[in-house]
Image (tube, rainbow, N blue to C red; front, side, top):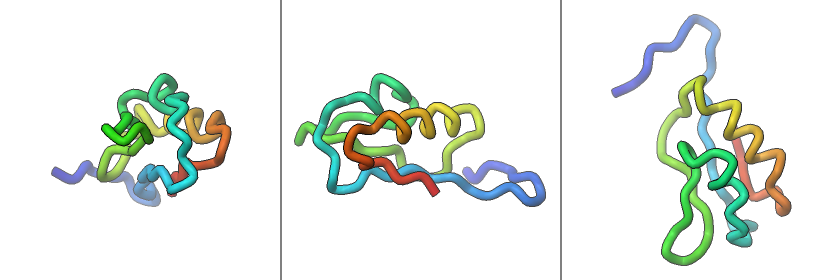
Length: 72
């Protein structure tokens, strides 16, 4: 179900790229968006991030030691 956006608001999505080393920092910073896979690397939830978790996802991006988190 798509969320209602205010005029001028853009959708924000998170992605973990192939640089991930599986340190788990993103998961501990923002478990609402990131989780560890069975392969030992992180992945982000599918779809748009709510305003409530977008800030925490940005904190996880800033803390990633290998710049594996992309938020757009």
